[in-house]
Image (cartoon, rainbow, N blue to C red; front, side, top):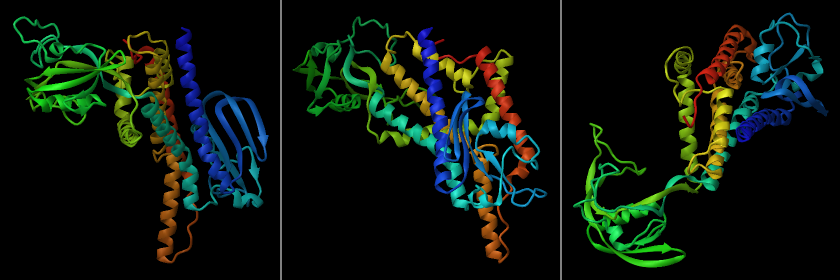
Length: 447
């Protein structure tokens, strides 16, 4: 139970730090551009502690599952307000969900005079607005990529190493069951050559072995010749000889997976066969693997966001019916916490501290990628809504210049209040549904 709680604490701290850095992504450019930032807060609910530095109050609230910075003049002055009125608004999703449900024409709790007009968010140029609003999601993207670098280069990715895990006793068909009898079948070349489990394959047929893919390539190309095999055993290198046999083995794709035909049958080819199996392990990889991994995570996360209504319907079907829940579907904060606790407390063979650390890092990388993609959705109160407003403003001003017309001024995104309220209600309903589903139909790593 203690390890379970520790896992929950680690993922909660990682998520809170990610949110804090997200808001720093907004805070730093806003201050650099001269916008008056009155608050930087982590969490929501009652304020636990705060300190004012300069003109900004920095603080921590009771529930650290959100965050915001409060800038003055995020929206233009409304018609009917006293001349020079400047209101303050926030970047936080939870804050905007509650604050923007009030009358859009009403004053906020704090107001500022016309002397601050040049320090408002709305007074920024379009490019600067984009930098401020994209700063938060970009921070989450950078965190996700950095965690992937740690995972790939430090912890390592699941792979098969040239350390021999097992040696076949005989030559059997590739699709034979694991318990097939060796009676009447020829002995495997590796067994006859004296290769043992625990040996590290260093050289095969003159080819240096660094990865398991090197073993596969060298053995298959050797066909049925007698070749030299160098293994490392107990710290010493031994030179052995193995007479290979040609056998039907699966055709492998670029990722090392067996190729299947249109009917789902494994495609085979006649190649050299040695009869050894490598040892699965976490193997550090080159940083060049990270861009492809980040792109794949982005595409998968984007696919989830684009199909979110369908996925939420499936979650509801599982939560309130007898349907099984999709293990790759969306999770709420309860579900993420539960999985983190399972990872930390797992007692599974081969799933030790290194594997647990890698899984936790992968979870945090996925969460940050989700924050990046989700915040780009062009709807208020998300950051993407403000980005869309800035782009619309830029397009209107460019069109006015091309037509020789006066500057139309900034776009008043607060006019989108009805849609914003509807989106906010959907977010609340989604959050409640996921929390309920995580409780009654949880997704587990170890059923």
